[in-house]
Every structure is written in structure tokens, then in C-alpha cells.
Length: 300
Image 1 (cartoon, rainbow, N blue to C red):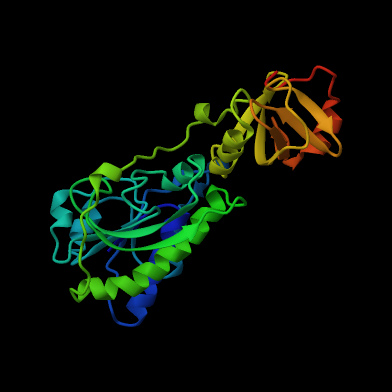
Image 2: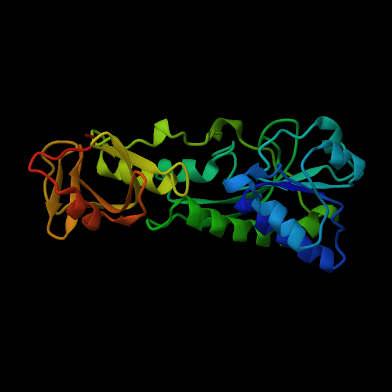
């Protein structure tokens, strides 16, 4: 049985489907969160539910359905809920595909946390489940560098692919008793949490690199932002520059063909922005429409 919800989990579900096609396992059911209300009264399906339906697998939105399927094994990825002890007590227990190199970045938002912290690498971990949250012994892992061009969405896709490969390779060994579980080092454990909208407000009294990492971590949600004339200005892409010395944190000015914002250290260069109620646009296009004054400032 598989449990999961976001995009990251769909890659693991497809890996299980490939194992099922080879006769290694059977997928009794897929558990995911219920569809959310969408626009104009239509449901907005979850990614895992979409893939499960595409694969012709039974989909449920509650854990009692898991008990009814009487599974021998639970596999989950980014499910976001604690698994009850009675379900973990099935024949092969539970295996979790987690989007970090445990014990670093336990919790619900390891991808955002790794980017925010400026980590140079991350990875995926296959973990044997226990009663805690991301505390079980480790079975296998794979690493990947975090590129300066990665945001949370691109990194989620790459980690999803890595996790699927790892699951497809390691799960048959786990079922055959060929993997040794290694306890986590609790002294190295760190915890992640999902970014809130309030935490995604850019602070130009901090160095440009800290704001740049926030922009990357907050894609695709909640999206980093500042305020222009009292309205939110979302920042989807940005970079850091040394082309001039910053003078006053938050000073907004045109530097050549780019828009620059002074910070406590280096310049913050917004590249793709989205004004309130409008589409995404390049920062220079936005600046031309905004008609920046000599004393322009963010936030304003």
C-alpha cells in the first residue's frame, strides 16, 4: 500500500508500479488526501490521486481504507500525517522515502529548509518507519548537489526522480531481508517547517544572499514578496550582484538594464516579479510601468 500527496510522491508511486509490473509487489491501494475545492466549484485533484487513477489503482482518502486492504507493507513519501502504530505492525512494516539526508531536515519541508540554510547538497533517504516522525533507522540514501539555479520546485522534481530510483532498487532488497537498518544520529537531527506567507517577506536589512535563498525556497508557494506602494510584489526569480556598493537597505534603483535593491551586503537583483492582480513579468518591465522615483524604496 502506498501513501502520499504532493508531486514528490508521484515519482515513488510510479516506481512501485514498475515493481508491480515485474511481479515484485502488488499495490493494494493508494491513500492520499482528499481533493481540495478548486475554482468555479470544480475539485482540484492531488498529484498522487491523478497518477493513481492514470495507473488504474484504487484511491482512498482515509486511513481506515488502509486497514481494510490488509496490506503486508506500507510505503509512503511526503504523506504529511503520522501513521498509526497498528498499521506499522503489518508484516513488513513501513518504508518512507524522505526528501533529505536524514537526520538533517526531518519534518514536512526538507527541500525548502535545505535551500534556506544554504546547504551545498541534499538527497533522499529510504527509512524504516517507527512510531516517531522521520526518526526511524536508515536503509539507503542518494545525494545530489544543490545548484545555485535550483528552486524548491526544480529540486523537488530531481529528488523525486532520485527517490524513485532508490526505491525501485532498494525495496526488493528490503523485502528479501538484505538491507541493514542503521539508527539515526540524534545529535545531528534538524527540523523543517513549511514556510508561511509571513515568513516569505523579503528583508533587505539582511544580506542579498539570504533574500535570494528565500526567493528560491518559496517557489512555487508561498512565493517571496515585498511591498510596493502598499500592495504585494511577488518575486519569482532573483540573483545577487556586486556591480555596485549598496548604500541604504531597500533602496530601489535602475542599474544599467537591471533593477537593483540595496541590502545589508551586496545587491539583490529581482528578475521576475508579479504585481498584485497582474501576470508575471520581468523586473525591468515592471519598473518601467512603475515609473520609479529617485527615492524609491522597498518595501513602500
